[in-house]
Length: 309
Image 1 (cartoon, rainbow, N blue to C red):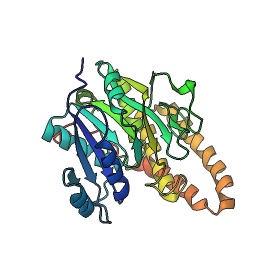
Image 2 (spheres, rainbow, N blue to C red):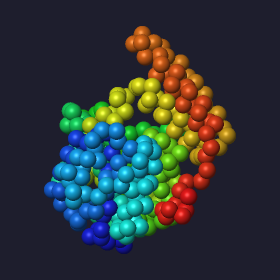
Image 3 (tube, helix red, strand yellow):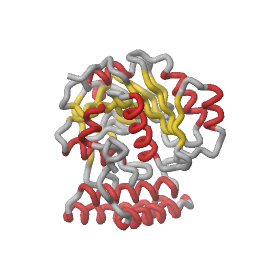
Image 4 (cartoon, rainbow, N blue to C red):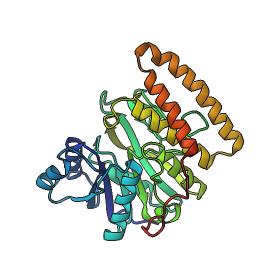
C-alpha cells in the first residue's frame, strides 16, 4: 500500500499565463491534505511571468526551460526535477487554468493507495457554466481523435457520481505515484501539445495498471484559454500531428489504415463546416499536422531519470 501522507510534488507548466498561474498557486495555499512541493515550469514565457512569480511568490520554485518546449516536455522537466531534488512519492500534474475545490486532493490520494492503480483523476467541470461536465474520466478509441471525455457538455448528475475504472484520464489534473512513473516512464515530448496523456495512459494500461475516475474530487477548467479557442490552425495542426503519432505507436496496420480513413472523412466534413465561417485554414492545418505526424521521428518514451532518454 502507498502512503497518502507522503510528499506530493505539483507541476504547473506556464507559458505567458501569469494571472492563471498566480491564481492557482493561491488556491493551492488553501487546499486540504499533505504539504505540497510546488514547482512552476516556465516554458519560455515572453511576458513578465518569471519576474512577477519571483516578486509575488518567492516561496515557489521556478524552473525555466528557456524556450517553449511544449506541454509534455515541460511536465517531463518538472517531474524529473521534483523526483531528483525532493524525492517526492506523488506527482500531481495540474493545469494553471483551473479552479480547484479545497478538498480535491485527499480523495485522489485515497483512491490511489492500492498498488495496481496507476493514476487517478477528478470530476472536471467547465468553469463557465460551473455545473456542466468537461470530463468525468474518458476512454481511448480508434477514431480520427483518439480520446473521448465522458459526460462532456452534460449537466452534472448521478450518472457522473460513480467512481470507476476508465481507459483515459487527462493531464488537466492527474495524480500519479512515483513507482508507476518508474515503470511506465514519463510523458513523451514528441507530443508537443495534446495526446501526450492518451499515450501515457495507453502505456500504463499496457503495463497492467488501472486508471481511476474519482468524482469525490472536483475542479473547474477554463477551457482552451492557452490555445486561443477550440478550432484554430495552431490547435488543429497539433491535434492532427499528435493523433498521428499516437496511431503510429499504438495501432497495428489495419487500425492505422482505419484511422487514416476516418481522418479523411472527418477532414471533408470539417471543410464543409468551416468554409462558410472563413476558417478553412484550420482544416488545412489539421491535414498538415496529420502528414507531419506520419513522418516525424518516433523513438521510445523517456524514463523517469534524466539519464533514461
